Length: 322
Image: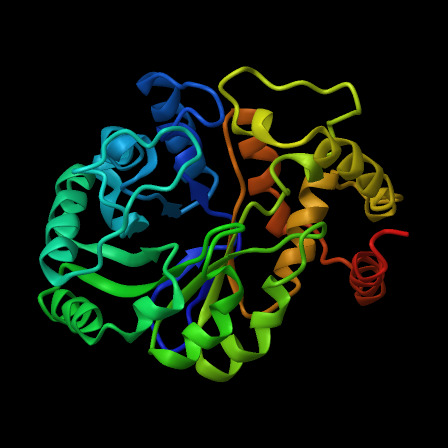
């Protein structure tokens, strides 16, 4: 495993992190506490020290599973969580629909205390606004509260986590300009390079470290899907149009050159493509079995992709994989 440090901080994370939402919610299938324990403990054995979660996933379960498995290892871990959705007044998420958000100081403090309780810790390494919109960045009281929580030692750093296809997704650059922050979490991968790559220059200028979720484009870039692939009833990918799968499978075939003549899976190559960008501190693949975990955790130790291959993937995206 390799590690990177957020600019201007002592916050160091593994290049491959663990997104606990795959275990704490039912969007990727259900997992018993025993299965969660085994995966989280194995991830630490493999050098994965960064765990990203959020209070809204499974109404807090995605936070609770971490100390249940790794309470004795807290000092070795960097734990990031998210806040902003009112899961207390609106516990029913109604599938893929968004819940109401709250950013007032009372709620932010309450949400932080609840996350600290569920995580069984007295500090959060990285506290992230979950899917904020640009007007939220105008709230001086919100950022004064975050500064106060930082001064009190309840959070070490704070940042933003942008969501897919909702307000705010395109505003990452403007948000970094608005406020000082440690991190910006984005979607970026070989199949979905925009708007993520448009944030690189601002992140570099502002000293913000990027986190990448969905690095395998919801599983497409693991290389196992075909036109006949189906998903279990509760899987969130069942809600996507069929064209998402059919188009994605065709595009993935254009990327198979990344593994030719190399002892590397497509899933590993997808991570190496992302990690070629120096402003990216960590990737957060969706992990729900030990085989995936071991495959992805091995990626940082593999040889980097040649610059020509990186440029070819960029050009393919720009031509819509023509």
